[in-house]
Image (cartoon, rainbow, N blue to C red; front, side, top):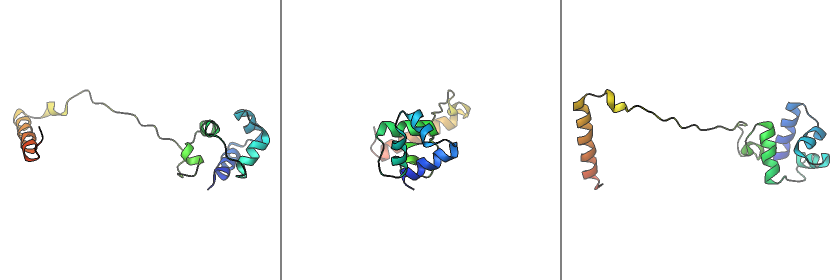
Length: 108
């Protein structure tokens, strides 16, 4: 699907006119029409604004994916050490195994 088709589809789903979208984006009505007919391509700043307005990714607008939403990645950090639950002998065995691997592959 082309950028213009995606834009038109998103606009219609939101039930807004080209004039309303143009006002939000600070462009002329004819600009929206040209984008939707693929006569004209928006600049990167406009693509970002459109993506933000419709809450979709730029890749979706550009037809690089069919998944509209952006996924945010959050890092999860453990504050505990999973080794704490292991018996002492198991920890020693793990350390021996790590040393074996280092020697086997010449890792210092």
